[in-house]
Length: 459
Image 1 (cartoon, helix red, strand yellow):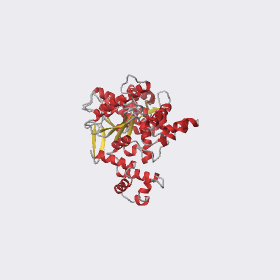
Image 2 (tube, one colour; image 1 turned 90 degrees about the horizontal axis):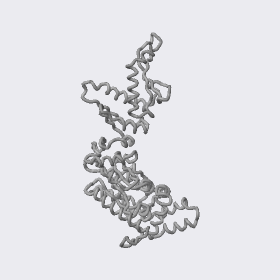
Image 3 (cartoon, one colour; image 1 turned 135 degrees about the horizontal axis):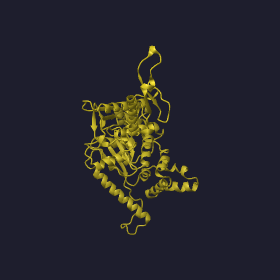
Image 4 (cartoon, one colour; image 1 turned 120 degrees about the vertical axis):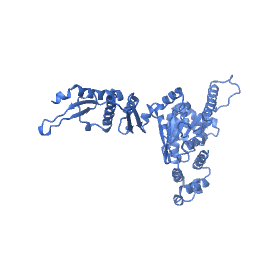
C-alpha cells in the first residue's frame, strides 16, 4: 500500500515540483534531494494515513531521512520552496496578489546558497520581500529593488539607493557592489579609499592610536581598487542614502622637480607629470561630485598615502620594517638613512620604492605591525575618519579612546605630565573628561579628532 500510494501521479508531481523549485532557486549543487512517500505503519492499532517528506543531502545520495534530520537552513529552503509552489498552484484563485516575507534568512543558510537563492528567487507570480543584514544577499540584489532602513533616534528612515539615477549609473553601482563593498549599505558611515594600503592601514592606525576599530565607531572602510569613487559615492545624497560618505584619495603631486615644459621630460619626469595631472583631474571631478552634496566630503593626500604617512613624522615605524625586507646590513643602513631624511623628496621616494618592491598591500601589512600609540595619523586620513563617523560616534566612545591614549603613554610622556592622575580622570563624566583632555593636550591626535567632529557636526 505504501508503494502504491507513493507512486500515485499526484504525489510524484508534488515531489517533483518541490525539487524543481529548489533547483531553480539554488541550483543543483546545493539543492537537497526530495521525495514524498507513504509511511503507513503495519500495526492495525497504529494505522494512520500520512505522507512524509523524506530529504537527502543531494541527488547523488541514496539516503532519504526524516525532515527533522535536516539542518534548520535546509528545512527553511524546503519551506520556502513549498510556499512558492503553493502560490503557483493557487494562481487560478481569486487572490489579488501573493506575498512572501522572509526575515533574515542568512542566519541558517550557507553563504553560497544565499547568493544563489536570492539571485534566482524573484518570481513573476509572487512578490518576495526580504529583510536582511547579509552582504552576500545584498551583493546579488538589484540596487533598484533595495530599500535601506536606518534607525534615527526613535524612528526609522527609508532610503532608496537608486532613486533618480540613470539606468547606466545604476548598472555601474551594481557592478561595484560585491560582497565586500556592499557593507556600505549597512554602515552608519562610509570611508572610500583607493586601494589595499589604505584599507589595511586605516583600521590598524585606529587600533594602535585610539584602541578602537571602524566598526566600533560605526563606519566601514571600503577599498575601491581604483579611483572610480563616483560610481559608488553617487548613492549618497539627500534623495538617496542620507549617511556620510568620506573619500580619501591622492593628488599624486610629483616628488621630483619638473621642468616648465614637458617636451624635455625623461622617463621618470614624464611618469611623475602624468600622475600629477591625473591627480588634478581627479580632484576636479570629485569636487564637482561633492559640490552641494552635504553627505560627501573629499580628503586629499598631497602625494600618495605612503609618502604622506612618512611625511607626517612616521619614519620610525617604516624603518622597523627593514629587518623583514633586507638580510644585508648595508642595504638596511642605506635605506634607513634615506627614510630618516628631513627632505621629503628623499624619504618619500624611498618609501615608495619599498612599497613597489614588496607590493603595496604586503608592505602595508608589514607596516601595520609596527604601529604604536605615538604613530601620527595623516591629517587628511583623520579628517576623513571624522566625517565618516561624526553622526554616530558618542562621548562614551571618545572617552574610551582618551583613556586608551593615556594608558598607552610612557610614564614620562608629555600626555602623562599634562593630565591629572588616572584615578582622577576615571571619575570624570565623558563630557568633563573630554574637556579636560583637550585643554591639557591641544595638539594630541584625539583633540584634533574631536575638533574635526565638531566642525562637521556644525555644518
